[in-house]
Image 1 (tube, rainbow, N blue to C red):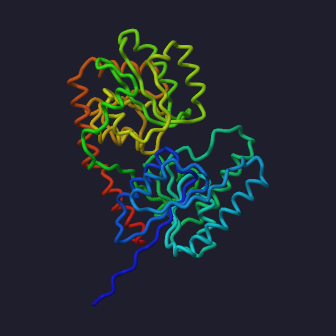
Image 2 (cartoon, rainbow, N blue to C red):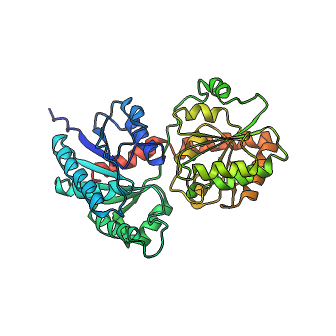
Length: 389
């Protein structure tokens, strides 16, 4: 009788386990990775672990190294942070018999790649989630130089680099000069098997003080320049003149929270817009939404957008390449120029005015995500990588 092959142990290493697209991807992998073939562990470098419970609920171990991250402008402290994490990860790889390490986000990339090599691993992967590989900093900022150095060195040490969209892959080729099999494109997927109606939506509506006649928009994303919430505020300032019962729920945290809240006050929108922070009840919040809005300036493949599509929500999103690969303007969504509050307002008003069109768009988007972006498709591609094919 032929012996059954042993499971491979995969360590997914990430900077922090707070709310974001890369972190939500790990929750999906925790739920859907075949347990008969792979054992999954999530390693977290920092002490931010908001999604820990969601991952552990699927029987996946989360190991938090839990070290506060010093600024790279404090080089000796940062070097100590990196070396201690590398040391601990090498020991972890040996203790847990890790076969594969897959690194997500910037610190995990170089710390995980170095630790994987020191531990003697043959399969070391980097997953790149955004096309903005280099931070927007002054030309002579040392952090920009160090990031370039990390990309050139560590990316070359990886077995392969996984891009979550064609745009990310193209940017990787530009920055690294890599080609061929060194860069793989595996587009994010989403769980499409969840219930169409999220239980608890009425509770959420009551908690947030939403009236039955309110027109509710939802937007999900880190509060950063990339996500473009400032243009959503501009759009709402235009829309409230025609829609006095408009309410906007913004989910996410980030460095621009204070600035965005101040802009709300300046625009007189405090009663219209609620900043809800990070929430675990995203399905319930989407259930109370009439429309979903994604004002991002750039993306990899947005998990939040896929979630809205799976929920059958009518969508107004920016006309950027990754969004165009998911949605077709005028067929199952409205796509508007990025960085343009007036255009965003016009798109939202279009769907608010035509419930029939909005409903048809929502159903069309749900059909697309079920046919082309289900998590099972993404997993089949990942399994080929993990199996070395």
